[in-house]
Length: 478
Image 1 (tube, rainbow, N blue to C red):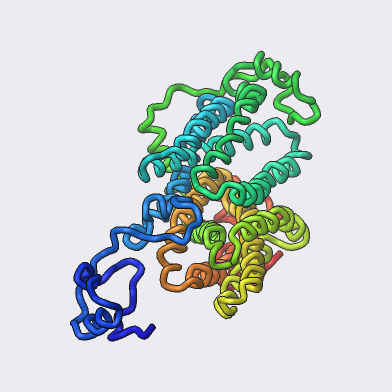
Image 2: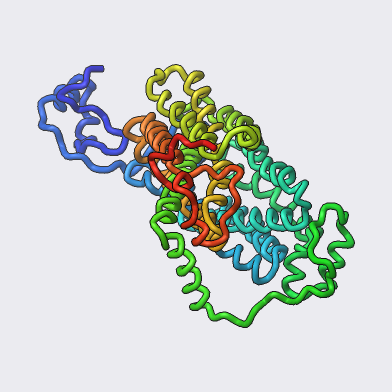
């Protein structure tokens, strides 16, 4: 059909014709009438048709999250990320104050309640609230369980157990694609992934409290009972005489003083120019790594003709990405490894720009390579960050870097949905450019391999020039 006078149809707006009058004409007369009239004004569409076999099979069709409401679609994923951001602080405080197990139990109960609530949400905003609390519960369960694991495992087995623990993420990623294939509607899918949450009740019953935390609270008898039920070979030595451990809880500190102390530690990261340069580079690399990771995860429809296959393959390539950094780091330094992985990720994502949109197989292969490198770089930048700062600033540096990385996961849905609206390759190209920039930034950092950890800022000030952030030191890899 010939489009007359540029009257191309829009998916979000409709022309304000008198359709009742046009309905009385035959096709040819109506076409001539439209061609003879000036272009009418446009008004937003009030109803939409979706290419779905089952009506309301997605949240987009359920609440018409298209056109002017497109940012509301991005809110669905961002609500989870914001929940993780809040949950990291909230459940971290609960775990330190009331115990790791108490934090895990509370997070598990939140999971069990909010999962079905999200599935049966009658309104969009109730669904967003449920997703937010699912995000907070996710942080609580992960952090509490991982803390207990590290506090009861010996140093010889801690790295292996940590790797096995993190393998649950790619396994869950692959399983999700299979479950989504079996349950095509979003409500049935949410119910299906909520049912396994009931297994957390078993964990809540059998999971022991951390003996280290019990000792710091002066509860030696309970700590000893936990230790007796665990193989002593996997429990790190706590003290020469367990009965001599005193309660480490100091005097009551008001909330406002805790907040002030937190800000004091944060500003301590900017106490010197060298610290400021280091933390700014760390913030940038963490943000880019998280942004790229979630953009690749959410951009499935542009990378593959089958989103289920893409999700399954993403989980499959992510599993070995946790092991690769351990192998490379045993031969090379932190700078070289981090820069190399960012470079591979950046080149892969930018290469997508030059591949024909019809060549889905090649786009899929290159995108998975970029995802593999981006997943692997996380292990490197976490280790590098922990070694770049003195003991007095180390925890704050890692904690704030993790918070900045969550901003990347919050922005990712908007990058995919809003910027991808103009061209499908914009999100991946943007992340590719940022990854290449991060690859160069890491080269400015000092190498920390085989270097002793610093304890104070004075140690940092005494460091030689080659152990400072500088363009002249970008080629030092040892």
